Amino acid sequence: MNISSKKIDIVIPSFRLNESYLLPLLSLHQPANWQFHYFIIVDNPVVQVPPIIEEIARNGEITLHINEKNLGASESRNKGISMGSAEWILFLDDDVVANADLLHQYAQAIESYPNEIGFIGLTDFPEPVNAYTTGLEIGHLSHFRIAQRKEKFTWGVTANMLYRRSSLGELRFSTLFPKSGGGEDIDLPLRVCLQHNREFRCIEEAKVTHPWWNQGKTDYERFVRYGMGSGYLLFFHRHRTHFDFANPVESLILLTLFSPILIPAFGWPTWLLYIVSVPLFEWVISFLKVSSKGFKSPLTAYYMAMVKSSFEFGVVLTLIKEKKFSYFMKRINPTFSRSQHFRLNKWKIIKLSLYLVMTLYLIIR
Image (cartoon, rainbow, N blue to C red; front, side, top):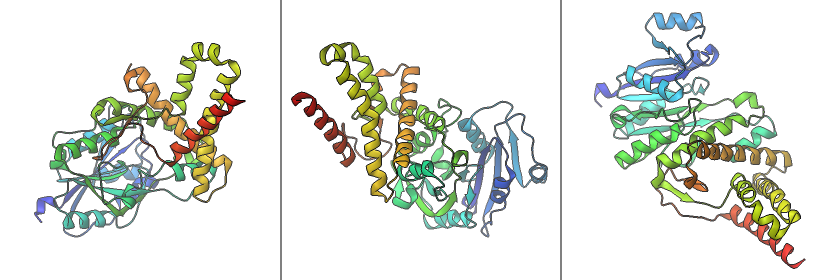
């Protein structure tokens, strides 16, 4: 392998500069005959730099860059890209705990598959600590662990992902996404894959562990923000969208918008019954899902449904903000697989059956 290809820039955007997380990342064991350089991009102009981080930067072991103003996750990562020159760029979050052999695993992957456009590592989570994190574990973390399920894929979370610089070319994280993040870690790798007509290779052995957000406490606002960011994907990648059955948030909007017609036609009680049935049936489906994983917890099902609806609410907020109403009830398919409108699965069939039974009961009672 060419010596110039055995260099990796490690870009870590940070707001807090929490040394308890950063120092272990900066101290990861490096394989022989490889060169690594860290770029810590601080997106907090008034941050107090810990003395030990300041000393490491002063010694030239890392490049520490403090943004003059808050730029957001996308632009901070872009700065890290432009400041380096290595053929490979590893993105890590500033709060992950990496396996000791992380850099060895990526170096070995490059040596084994030198022509890949990049690699998706495994971003794992600790064991759940309560009903809320159990709901996240069951229903909302599959994309973090895509490296456990796929050999290749079109995108991975930027908490742990390696790009080939030449594959990136002039492509960068889009600054049109919200500063708080959401959507940009799907958008960029998808554009890279589409440009090269190939996918990233997954490396399960390149593992980091991400802590539970907010110490595992209930936090719906985070998923609203993620949904808002992901909403932009619909019109940024409009050719990869398809229509789907209305989710709970969309269902409540439709029932509200058509209430001037529905209430006179069917009466208040029937309209209210459908309003109530939307969150109730979503909870039923969530309970069936958690039960299928061995958990018989109504509270876990509740949290799972709430997180899902929070994300969906965020998507709708973006459509309203950007006046993109034609994307209502549309979904993004960020893969090379063919999209299908109103695609069914087991859970959708069960939910549709619940509505059908309720409607038949109202007709024949």
